[in-house]
Image (cartoon, rainbow, N blue to C red; front, side, top):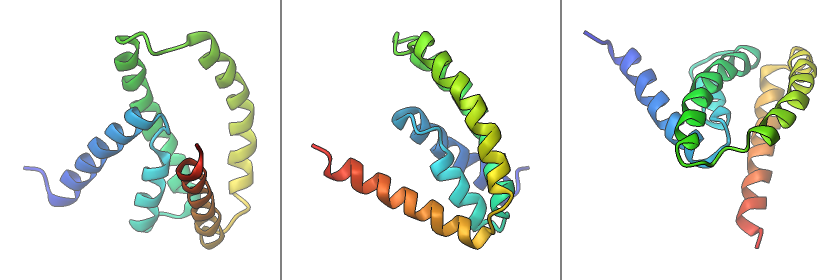
Length: 120
C-alpha cells in the first residue's frame, strides 16, 4: 500500500509532467519550489530537479515527436551550449545560500511571468 507522502510525490510528478510538456519549461519552475517547500537545501533541490526534468523530457520528446513538433537540429545545438552552461551553473549555485537562492529564483519567476503577461 502506498503511503500518503509517496502518493503526494507521484501526484506532484503527474502535475509537473503535464505542466512541463504543455509549456516547454522543463518542470524545474515547479519542482524546485516543491522541494524547497519540503525542506531540501537549494543545491539539492536544483540537482534533483534536473533528474526529474531528464525523465520528463525524454517522455515529452517522444510524445511531441508523434506530432512532428521536435526540431532535432535546433535542440541538439542549444543542448550543446546548455552542457557548458550547466557545468558553470552547477558550480555557481554551490556558493549561494538557500535563503538567497529562494529570493533570486522568485525574482526570475516574477520577471518571466510579467514578461509573458505583458508581451503582445
